[in-house]
Picture 1: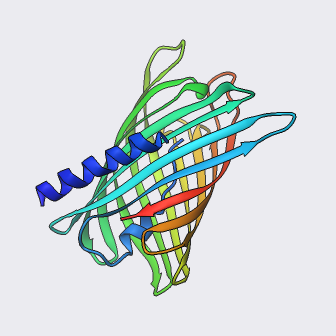
Picture 2: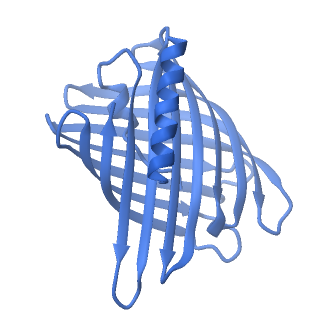
Picture 3: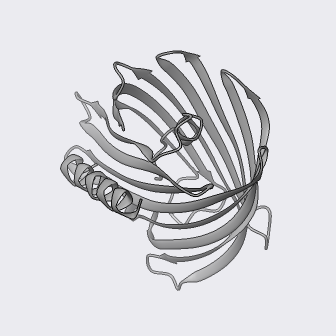
Length: 251
């Protein structure tokens, strides 16, 4: 098992380096509801561009990998996003996420997670967090899955030109997956992360993805991501929206 995990991580890392491709969204529920007990994962490369009066390009790559250790589930996610407008860099962010899920009942599990991220154009030099929570299955049918996550995390962040700070935040999410047919899946996730010091300081993130399979390992994927920070750093917009289309490899 250890050798299998090592081999797969090496393959995933190589794919990311070859692709050079915000916390990108990959359909985690699709991995979880695949019915496979062994390791599985998805790696994708997406683009968005515009030519004419304004030249704009965004490239995003992400990989989500799932391993089973006895009955415990391990999720490992990596993402990177780069963009230019009129050949001037204006997007540069990335993140890594590690999550352990331990089931207690078919409808209930505990979660522990670590995350690290940066975002140059939101003046975020570094944000590290670790947290705990519970995951609840609210609804499950052959083609529909709905889950609720509740918990909290401690974060430490460094913002450009400001002293470092730390906070405790709540962490709540709704995760939905619909299997439209044998070749198409629609998934979405909504996150709400309030600061325990003041609930007027909160983050919202909504992500939706449509995956259409071309064959057993290759899919076309369309992603929409909307991120809102009620109290962003000075000079940073409250809301970011990104729309991307690309290819996804299932393994």
